[in-house]
Length: 312
Image 1 (tube, helix red, strand yellow):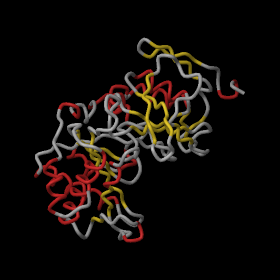
Image 2 (cartoon, one colour):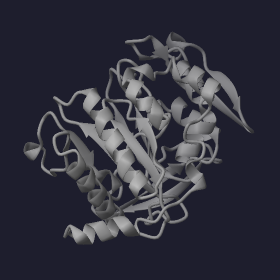
Image 3 (spheres, one colour):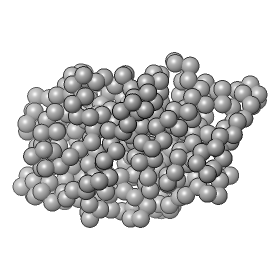
């Protein structure tokens, strides 16, 4: 069966050797990209994706038969993983169980995951050293079904304005779907509930400034189908979204691509794919290269939450 999809190959990744089986299996039939193309893509953006994932518990979205087939949400490290793979034990109160989730500290882990049919990487917004204290606040600009991309671009400019008023630098990226994400490094001094509450306060301020474009309504049925939802709930414990440089399981093999703010008005999600991002990365580097150089307080946002009477 392996010969049908090509003979296994061995790759040297840093100090590791990673065996890639079935390298010719087509993962993205819409563009003809194979498993080896996925591996080579992640090699090409190695510094960027390792930065995005470093020391974070990470759920792997695996597509054993390619993106046209079923998706597996892999939290537990499978049997037979290499002994050099690093993990962290996570407790899930809802189920009363634990899982050893992968922790990326080097590119070889990413390539091993790609060998295991991983297409998407979904990390926590906290790190292994203290999984219960997030150090990343995520702003998710999620368009409703009738919301045009131009409205997402408009809302991004409002979000940037609010961040500027807070004297905070955010780092935007495409979602790889129809939306945009903005990541902010924060001091790991608050729990998930407080970070979510701060994110809601921010979302409400964006909504106040752009009421015709934005919704923060929790229930989907209450949202304007043409609005952009500022999804504060992505900061809840164990909620994960695709990291910077993660491929997405779309027919076009799109990428969740880091951007400069000034690129957003002329950017479109389909500009960033398995074919285009490697050249972009080699040409301009990583727009998120400085993301770990600053960590912000959310105290002012929590004061806004108090002012607005948001629930604890």
